[in-house]
Length: 113
Image 1 (tube, rainbow, N blue to C red):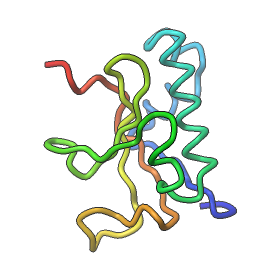
Image 2 (tube, rainbow, N blue to C red; image 1 turned 90 degrees about the vertical axis):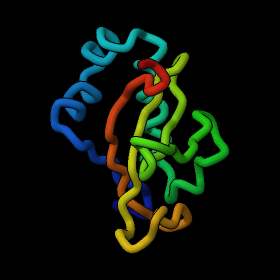
Image 3 (tube, rainbow, N blue to C red; image 1 turned 90 degrees about the horizontal axis):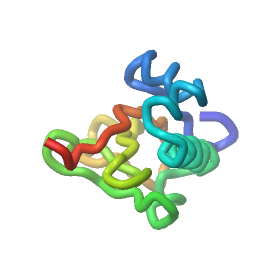
Image 4 (cartoon, rainbow, N blue to C red; image 1 turned 180 degrees about the horizontal axis):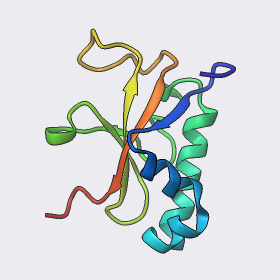
């Protein structure tokens, strides 16, 4: 975490590389979704805690089921940016008012299937 801001990491180097390439991001998700991915990641990086963005654009919300330890940000349609907070392994849910590392898990539509 630098200067009190959230640090964003990726669970998979391929996902990190995908997000780093505007061309690849647009090819996989389309222009609108790719733009929103960049906006959401910028908002996460600019925030000092997740609490700063819980009620902002993207409607950040905790997930259940297979993603019970994760949060999601809305992108386009059913697409979501799924991530986990990493600030304490001792709690069921990390404290969203404390600076943490964001670990991006996936960019997907978990409503399908």
